[in-house]
Length: 314
Image 1 (tube, rainbow, N blue to C red):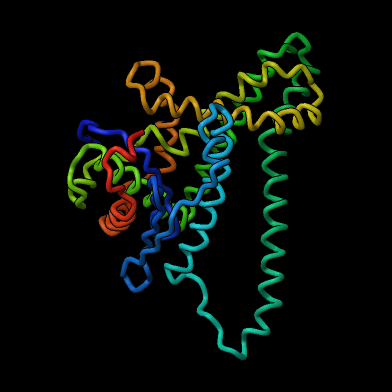
Image 2: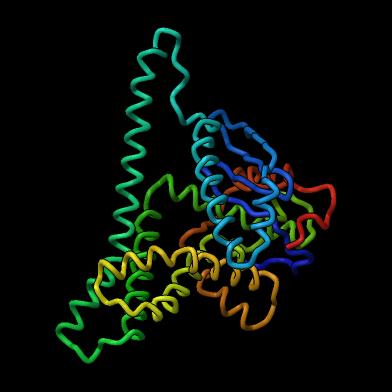
């Protein structure tokens, strides 16, 4: 898909939601969600950050962890809110149903917490413990393979295969397919803005849906960085190795963030090479949007554009 030349790289980022798009600018965040009625529902709120967090967010490596936590919290809240704005949630009950609904809401909340805990445990077991366990079984059969380099490469490749398999599996779900299409609309709209073109459906439609500064690219970089970090872990016992890997996640997040930040600023062959794996993975996590999806992305982006054109420079 062709795209115009980039005139300005923006710090504005976004996220695909349920039937909509969220954009986060320098001063505020906006959601544009397509309601079941067909109208676009907008919701905006200012970005709040304390002075201490603003100072921390400027420290290399540390800022990556801070930004990731903030993005995860904000993304989850916006995702849940988008379901309400789209009219996908059940209508508010009447007075007679509110009391009975409180107990139900408590059990639903409890179930969500338990589901989150189980999900985290499964992710740790699948992406961290299982690769270490498999390599341990292999080295028992072929002891000559036991060294840090082969262990790190094997475990890293298994994690990448599992990650790709997971993305391919969830991409088969109808709702996720639509989220991936909104993801494509988000990328196209940002590319159109960076090219200095008017934000119209026609201009946005012809942009590329593969963007180097994307969360997918960040996750891929983390997986690759994890291979290098694992080389410095001397422990071979699967359980202890898993614990140490969990403790090194902030390190991988920090390095991955700095790499994607550098790759976003540089136009060298090396930065393009660093961005390439994430761009390939976006063939799964982004799909071509329709015009109604592009309209949501445009509305969200326009709502967060700063008055000062330099305020959102990358």
